[in-house]
Amino acid sequence: MKANFARGIHSAGVVSISPQSVECSYRGSALHDIGRLDNQPETIDQRPLTFLAISNFASMRSWKALPFIIAAIAQPGYGQNISTTALAPSKWVHPGAMISQSQLDFVKSKVSKGEQPWADAYNALMEDEYVSNPQAPAPHVIVECGPYSNPDVGCKVERDDSLAAYANALAWAINGTEAYAQQAIRIMDAYSSTIEGHNNSNAPLQSGWVGSVWARAGEIIRYTDAGWSDDGIKQFEDMLRNVYMPLTVNGTTGTANWELVMTEAAIMMAVFLEDAESYNTAMNWHLKRVPATVYMTSDGEYPVAARGHSSSPDAIIDWWFNQTTFQENGQSQETCRDLEHTGYSFASMAHVAETSRIQGTDLYKEDLGTRLRYALEFHSQLENGASVPSWLCGGELKLSLRAVTEVGFNALSFRMGIDMPQTENLTVKQRPAENNGLFVAYETLTHAQNDA
Image (cartoon, rainbow, N blue to C red; front, side, top):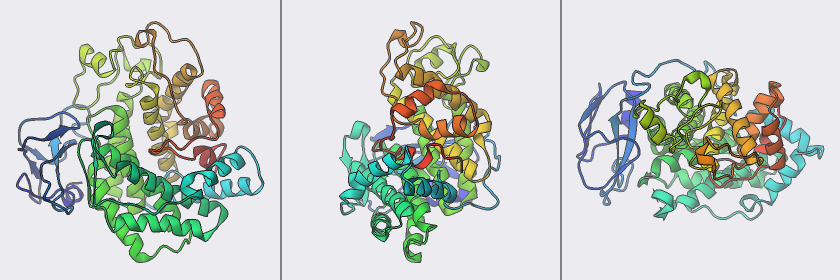
């Protein structure tokens, strides 16, 4: 981990690197705290890392001297001595980032026969402007993403372009039309030859959303004889390794949906890169975050504390958006914020479990799968119109659990046979699952009733 991480952190008078450790301190006036700021220099060896985007370095233009430094600050909390459980496969499966070749073959067969729900989902894909009206990619050298998209310098464009690459990769894999493969390649080559980094407070989140989608698109195009050049593949590998991986692989002490999608991205990118070290690091952080995201009554009176956060009742309540009562399996850290952000966490959990299953470890049968099952059922019933109990979020909820259930429902209910009536109701009602503009896209097409 140290060697890979050190390649992504370069000196600008703030961070110094030795072969044995990474010693970090900070100075300057513009710190955008992604997690918890520790106002002391730290030596980072095998301790958890969190990221701070440090701006005011506007004259720097390459990854070796970005307009900000990504400073690694050691954090207390769960996982301080992170497990080194090796979950990376001994032999990588490709395509293997959330969808496998056998799954793609299943979809292609269903679409060719005009069967539902795949036919409607395929039509929705082909009617999506990413496929039906492709735009020229518009990469920025530095993408700057502030809170709530202020500022937005290339952020939405980057998300749109990554999703367009994925959409066209799927279209190619299903119908074999070379033009779609070439459009996906055109987008990926444009970014890998241009982008050098991300800036501002939402840089890690943006890198998580986009890195996850890039990896999926790249895996499909690379391993389906689409005509991607060796130089293009190498350049894309370098982009993932140097631009996206350093911002995502060690997660964050921030809110649940951030860490889960950041580590999701790192896991999928590690598949593309066949990088076992990054895969294991990100997977361990992901699995450690899951119990701090979804509550089970077996956890006790209060949920598990996230790293960097106190386990005191008052701190837990504050971190869980003032939820004071914990009595149902499936309650989630952001439930009392809104169901949309809550659902992002469930999507990432399912994406990681699906990727891990393809790579040989079935996390659906482990703690992640159990928590995902109860989380989906608990929140689906609320989105389906069940009355909000008075003990939950003061009896008031912000709904909008968008189309994030398809992958988890397919694995847990269709494949494993677990009865999940609330999730089934919501999943079927939302078909074909929408593209949410971030990192969840076309999942009825790719995963509905797909037991491959």
